[in-house]
Image 1 (cartoon, helix red, strand yellow):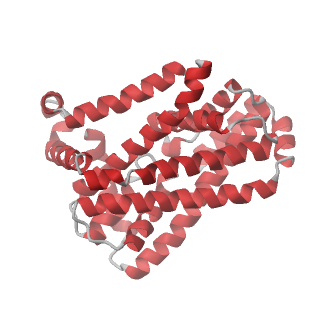
Image 2 (tube, helix red, strand yellow):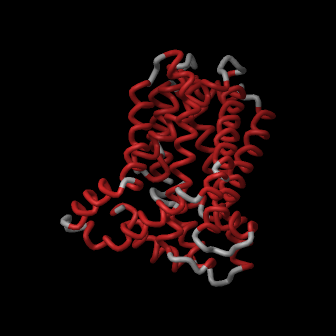
Length: 319
């Protein structure tokens, strides 16, 4: 929380605190209501998509439980790097599926979501040739991950390197299991057909951000430009490995909005509101969802999640 205050506050000071405050006062508050609604719907779409991935690895959970567990993990995701593993911990506890198998479902979902999000930024990149290098680098990164996971000779080379690396070699078994389950999921046609829910999540997220920009600026920024900004700022926050992408995400939002013609003070105001809405919605929904999930599944334990989460994070870093 301290990092969030320092990072966002630093961006406001770097632009112009008085102008940012003035811009925030002129925000069209009624437009923030559909932004909140779309943000909640995006969380639900994420949980629904995850339900079908969990079914593909043998978890026999009702849709309601899958969504509750998915949303429950979002409060941690908003604050910590690799926080998305929290929902994997919950699902392995409740669904009786190996933890590495559930991590594979999270990996596949984030790959497809990121790919759809990057594709949505394509029209603006092609039209204006802005941030083309960042877009290409992000797409290449996704492609490299896919090649490592799906091409056996490449994975064997990565496996050989990991086996001779002091830290990584302790997690060879987890790496192998994660790769095996990820490949099975990516070849599971019925499960991959439901990746359309990831596309729906992308559309909901972009529309929410577009409405947020309109609420602050009064218009002038198109949906495609909003997709461009959201996609590249999402990647910027993710690769930073800063808790919740705090600071890196906001700085990316400000810079990219400036590229598409938004005044710096307005861009900073949008970054502040986006962080408040996205993290606030995720944390509030996570608290409600966790309370409901804990009532249905008393075996869920925050202490267990913290203890196993550390091992899980190390395993994922090794992968």
